[in-house]
Image 1 (cartoon, rainbow, N blue to C red):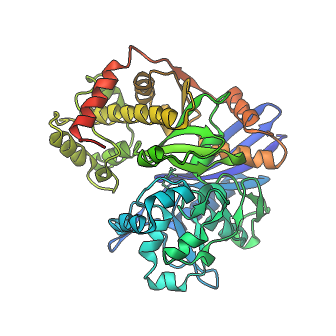
Image 2: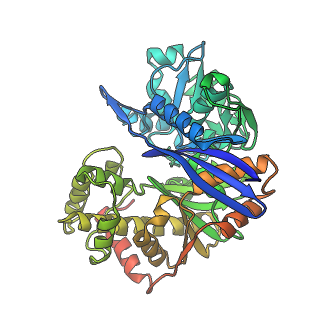
Image 3: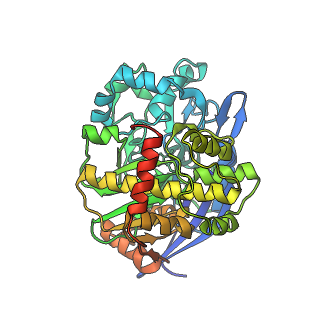
Length: 481
Ligand code: LFR
């Protein structure tokens, strides 16, 4: 086949995949070369990523992908590996859901000053931000020996090419990045007792990193290209929107709900609502909020020993709406563990019926998520002044018809669902643009997605007053936020 073929390595919290993207004139096709589980490992008290298993999955996938011109890597944000002076990895990267930052994150934020942190980095306060993870690591022997910090996609790119660097969309999630100067926030790091020299030189999406080294055992030597290496940033590239009056929900383990802006919004109201200003491609700002997302469903499924939610979702669709709703953003839902039990506790504590069956629990999760989507879409508009006419749901959640329909109902706006593999597509598109085969701007990249990918439109049903009532009930139950 003619045209361009590139490999997109996309690592999510529950699985990794290597996809092959093929572009011709007006065509864009994505096929899966390899998919592998991402299973965190608890060792002693600490929850780790199994980074070598992920690396092995990447190599297997790249072998299965066949000849490609380029390789791009994206993953979840904030987590990192530390390297010693010889370039060896110092210990397994710690999972962002690990408890090491519990309590510490608040103390560090208070010490540095929350307003000031927000003014410099524009970032929402999440306990697992790299800043707090590093503060937790700072006293350890490993940290003492560390000479370099690499975020997960940059670490894998280093292993493939031998080149170090820090891609900016992901760097912007660390709370160590100065979004005005577009550099590492060195003073902030020093003040936090951290060493700014750890951080690697920044690089932009679309820049070449280097050819895959022969030592990897991979055939050919495709060029590794920096993409928008934060998975959410890649997903936003592939939102099939036209114009600017849209909100997006990148819906997977997390729901990242927001709008795309030309400049950051650093208002006190936005800070209090925990909205973040993450860097996107081409100078854009991803003004969004982390909503707990399908994690609640995934972790419930794990507790029930089930893998495919399709049947439960069908039964959940037949159950009455709003029997019980919970605040999905409650930090009690963050760590791994008995999710159905925590949901039952939350219902009990707010005087609502406790879901008695898995289908009832799933209905509670989906209603609650749609409600959280409604709130975040409304807040994104109020806080940014951007008026929204459509909500794009991309990622695995676009497959969840019940969630998409309820999100449309809750927001009182049409939902356009798809593409499911938005992250891998965004990864492919940035590589294609670097090779001169797509673009030049985000509008052209998005038009290509719109014209080539499967999308489903959900119209809002009824008026959204029942959602307003459910929302009010939730806010009463939990007291003022
Ligand atoms: C989504 C995501 C979110 C980030 C969270 C933790 O996969 O990258 O954007 O807040 O994971 O890294």
